[in-house]
Image (tube, rainbow over all chains, first blue to last red; front, side, top):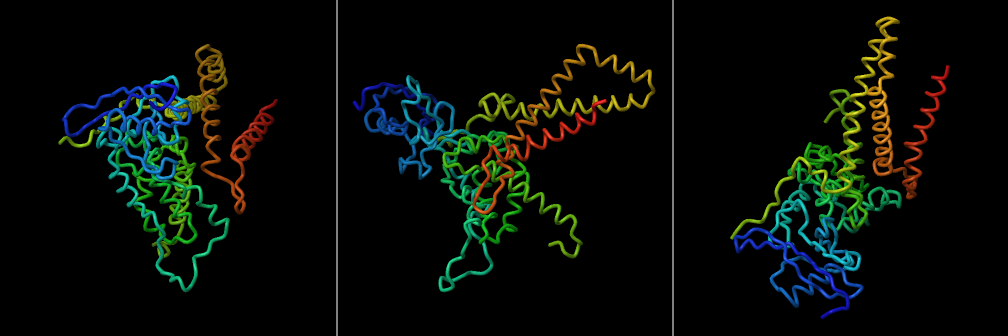
Length: 250
Length: 129
């Protein structure tokens, strides 16, 4: 046994191969003071039940793989100390608003498709070769987008956003924040290429500003703030186009 | 093999699942209360043009307990709505000077509470007999 304190984990189980319905399975764990929820799941998988399926990689809040619902809250399980949930039980479920492949593993394909729609990379017509040096930025230009660039694609924001459940086609907080992150980047010239995906009802305007995405974000990316800034920029662009003479419109 | 398990869609009481979702819904519903009050206010203005005795009758109606309760509800809704929106201003319109970003509390005061207080004081001053 591992430690001196005991806590019960109620883990969501679903196996597509056995044709059954999801259920919760309880495991009692002895844990050390510094253990996080991920440590407990790994211990259960190693010592009690090797059939549990879950994702994790870095165990230090960098990779974004181990996002789960812990007692109903979207959390990185590597950043959720077990002692904070004492005396338990701790209910562990896959991230809300995603299809579940097996146990705690969600199907990420919908998220990856949404990310691709906003073209989250620098777009320019000209290609600078290394001989001409880097694309330089002032500290102020970096500060304009820096917080929004810290996303680790953990998808906790999708689990915290109720619109994801009510409007399944919504692009979602992380994708929109990343799109806005590149729109705010002084090196980028791709705003026009992102506008169709980002400015539709399924994009920026689908956000009702609940704000929970920014509350649950472990990296303080503030997706809600990025989306509202995007709305302001889109509205300004619309008014600018509205007052322009016809010949000046694109 | 079964396909991935798809959680059931959100029901009509989805906002009860999380505290912040509920607070969001209260913020949105307060706008409906304010909209209803504006309808009431339009009726009041229409009555105002109907002559002195119609207006006096309408003023008497305002002292009815239901009217008093409605006004209290509208005031509470307006305050809640205003405060909950002011508190988002640091996210929506962060104030930056170079790399310096104004602290959220200062942004909220400058863009929300300070103009609110100044305009309220001006209205109060103008309304004094």
